[in-house]
Length: 112
Length: 114
Image: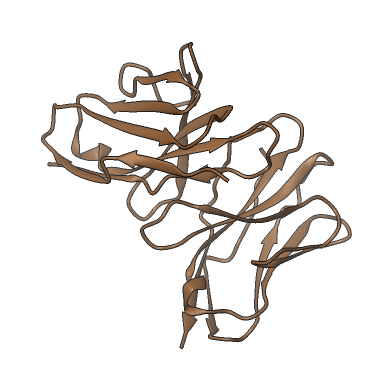
């Protein structure tokens, strides 16, 4: 699996936007970019995924660079409940159902 | 979506004993997986639980240490055998349907071996 690189930690203030970066310079053409987050004492939960175009859902937005070598997860207004570890994961679109290769992720701290 | 129930949620066990963790899903799913999360670390895939056949283990994990059963499409068990303190971790069950791009995780089982 292609690897991703994320900052170890980031901080934000409540109700401000948060941009979580991810580098994946060895991404292949069939790799989807997935984001999961793990709240304290919980299992990971799906946030968003995309292939080439930017994506929006009720939780976040995903901005994908034109060359696909990097992406950014955007939380438009951080809340205290968004404090979690955020994982950027590449998954081959055709073959890797279910198998997720987790990196160390980014620990997001949200200040009131 | 899928609702996953893992039991027990936590346990403290003596070294040399075994613990069986159960994973129950509220609907039929195609794929079931077991992960380990060591203290302060990220998640590592242990194996894919295959219905009606032997599980598929990832490098570094063996059946004798982590036997897995999956008798049907909604249930699986993971046994941690002959435990040592190094087995102290959170063990998580994950499921996914082939038609879906989203994996669902249980709350995890926090195991402490003393």
